[in-house]
Structures are given as structure tokens and as C-alpha cells.
Length: 295
Ligand code: NAD
Image 1: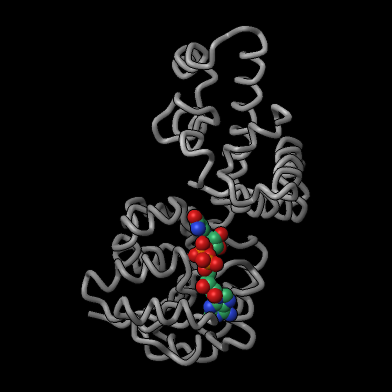
Image 2: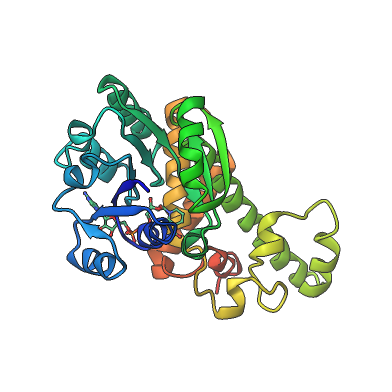
């Protein structure tokens, strides 16, 4: 079995690394937070002294970092990952970051003679723990084919989006749909109730009619309608509003760079900014219904 370098052993990275260990791979990990390293060590991860040391000599190096600035720092800056990686090492960035940084790092990897994919995920911490993540992959066909068996150890759906950066593009477009549609569901159910229509009845009708959508069916913003809703647990996440806010901001950065108008994406970003700035970032993103209702 091969050795895999794993950089960023936080809420997502550690359970992903654990799934690799469970299938017999060796994992050599690094994180800047000592507590994260201790937790990783306790789970059987061999601890490296730096990102470069984690990647050196590894068959594959995976990064699972908070944002674009951390990815740039690890690959191109102080982390020196590109300089340390062997020519045969496959680089996988599974962080959710802006498309522009993803393409910049891809370009630098290519110049260094290294193969890279961007492979952001959806499915959250529970998906990372259960190895049921969806990976959205940007990179060449060859790189995708090479990464697929390994990604399958951490996820259920491994999907090729296209060339470099398109994994991040897919993630940002998908989550913009989710953010907008959650607000649409919250607005419609608030209106329905104001019109004397019971939420359960509207769900019964709309979930079988043309207004149906994933946010309504799986994360309904009102309690006691859908079993899997965070609304049933007082909006304990689930998918935190702060994460949705981050993803919507990434969609707006991408839209500005592409010169494309996303008026509803912009509005959704503004609403989540208000919600998060009011101290609700730790609630589930479906809690946005509180803002719509004016709670
Ligand atoms: P996290 O903050 O728990 O973990 C990130 C880890 O990276 C931290 O342990 C941090 O110390 C480490 N780190 C930061 N800079 C570093 C550096 N220079 N070198 C080494 N380690 C460094 O975040 P997370 O929830 O695990 O999310 C990771 C990524 O996955 C993010 O981009 C997030 O948007 C994305 N994501 C998260 C979820 C989720 O539900 N948590 C779902 C889908 C996607």
C-alpha cells in the first residue's frame, strides 16, 4: 500500500485520512495546529514536521485547507509543497477555494512538472466520516483516472467536471443553486403561512409539484416536515450558515472575474452576510428562514 501525504487535518481532513488508513494506506500528515496533529497521531497518522515533509516521497499528496490563501501558502509559499514533491507525486487539493487560485496553483504545478487535480467535496463531516463524499474533479482525464481509485476510498460519487479549476467551478455553481433555493423555499413557506396555508399541506403539494427542489426535500427550513432537517434540532448544523456564506462569496468572486451577472446569487450572498453578521454563522444555513420571517 502506498504512502499518502495529508495536509490539513481538521474537521474534514482527519476523517478522510482515517478512511485511507482503514484501507491499509500509510498516511503522513501535517497541520499547523498542534491539537489537530495530536488527534491525527492518536488515529494512526504518522506526523511530519512540515507540509513539504508530508508530501516528500509520497505517491499522492492531499490538501484539505480552509481557503485559497492557505492553499497558495502551502503549495507556493512557506509550505514549499511544489518544491518538495517528487515528479511522480499526484497532487489533490480537496479544499473549497476560489477558481482563480485553483488555476494559479494548477499552473505552477504544471510548470514544476507535477500532475494536479482540484477535487472539492460535498457531503460535510458526516460524509467524510462515512466515506460517502461527492468529489468534483478538475484536471486532465489521465489525472482523474489516476486519482479515482483513491478518491473512492473517501467518497461515493467521483465526478469529472473538466479541465483545471472546473471542480471548484462545479462546487461554486452547485452551492449557489442551493443557497438561492433555500431562500426561495423559506420565502414561499413564510408566504403560505401568512395566507393561511399550513406548512405541512404546502409541502405535500409543492414537493410533488414544480416548486420541488433539493433544499425543500432534504433540508426543509421549518421543523417537523422533513426528518433530515436541521430545523428539527433548533438549526444545529448540518451545513453551517458560515460555510454557505463562504461558498456564496466564492461564487460572487468567480462571477466578477468571469464578467457574468448572477443577480440572485448576489442577493443570496447579501442575505447570508446579514444573517452571519448578526451572529448566526454557527446555525444551519436553513436558519435563514428566521431572517426572512424577521424573527
Ligand atoms: P477546518 O478548519 O476544520 O480544517 C482545516 C485545517 O487546515 C485546520 O486544522 C487548520 O489548522 C489547517 N491548516 C490551515 N492552514 C494550514 C497550513 N498552512 N498548513 C497545514 N494545515 C493548515 O476546516 P474543514 O471543515 O475541515 O474544511 C476544510 C475545507 O473543506 C474547507 O475549504 C471547507 O470549505 C471545505 N468543506 C467543508 C465542509 C464541512 O462541512 N466542514 C463541507 C464541504 C467542504
